[in-house]
Amino acid sequence: MSITVDVTVRDYENGVRPNWCPGCGDFSVLNAIVRAAVQLHIPPEEFVLVSGVGCSGRISGYLNTYGIQGVHGRALPLAQGIKLGNKNLNVVVAGGDGDGLGIGLGHFIHSVRRNVDLTYLVMDNQIYGLTKGQTSPTSPQGFQTKSTPDGNPESPIHPLQMALNAGASFVAQGFSGNPKQLVSLLTQAMEHPGFSFINVYSPCVTFNKVFTYEFFKEHLTDTQSVPNYDITNFAEARKFAEQTNYLCTGVIFKQPSNPYPDTVQRADSSGFEELSLDHVAFENFCDNYR
Ligand SMILES: Cc1ncc(C[n+]2csc(CCOP(=O)(O)OP(=O)(O)O)c2C)c(N)n1
Ligand code: SF4
Image 1 (cartoon, rainbow, N blue to C red):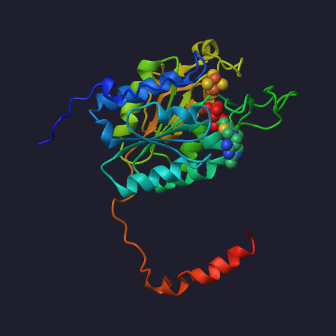
Image 2 (spheres, rainbow, N blue to C red; image 1 turned 120 degrees about the vertical axis):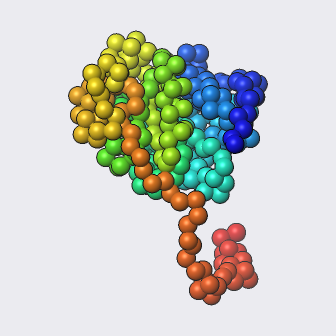
Image 3 (tube, protein in one colour; image 1 turned 180 degrees about the horizontal axis):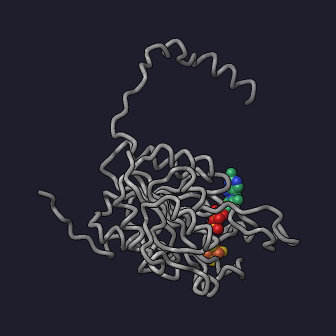
């Protein structure tokens, strides 16, 4: 018999006031994470929020739960270690497009392959917010920023395309301006066994004056508006994402997968004993650099 724990939003409040700019899309993501955890009756002591570096990366400090901000681009390996160390924890990872699709891109792809049971949410504002408005990997070609005053010469990474092509079994996209849907996407992602991915258009109101709330409200198409949209059809998912120029929302693709096993047979490490550290030699070596 499973016991349902009574959890409220208040249980997740830690009284720390986010220092995001008023109107930043990240507020909505924070609220959605809390509401999803509450809807799933997850007590704070069974929840971990791992974040990257950036304005978005501050998110893990704003909840009364376990949280850790990793070094830039390294939130996913941290989160995998946490989940594999304690499978009873619900692990959510959140970070920016620069963090996860620039410096952390390798980890993203390998996390999809490894398929550890966690949810990864990218707060995609198409810019580096914390460092004051440079071009990011999701900035479109021609986009003018402080680092590309003549327009971005590079073509962007499309997070949905990246996740689908890497083989992710749960791929969704949300928008900070639609908090109700965001909660629903998060609860579905967190319930999905294996690696689940949500890209969230989360406007930076200070440095990105092009991809605004108004822009997304006008341009986003939801899967629900497509008659008979089949979330299990990979070809349809890719086509829909491409045809909307990735300006789409909803669960784009979902299929069952085999999550990384809880217990993995480890290699016999007895042969490594001869590699054990000679502390005296090591200290002598270090002295050369002191
Ligand atoms: C190794 C390393 N390189 C660069 C930086 C500088 N830096 C901090 S945050 C950031 C990018 C932030 O952009 P994004 O991930 O999109 O997050 P946002 O601030 O927009 O939420 C960079 C380049 C760093 N902290 N560490
Ligand atoms: S600079 Fe942009 S991303 Fe950072 S807190 Fe302000 S609005 Fe949000």
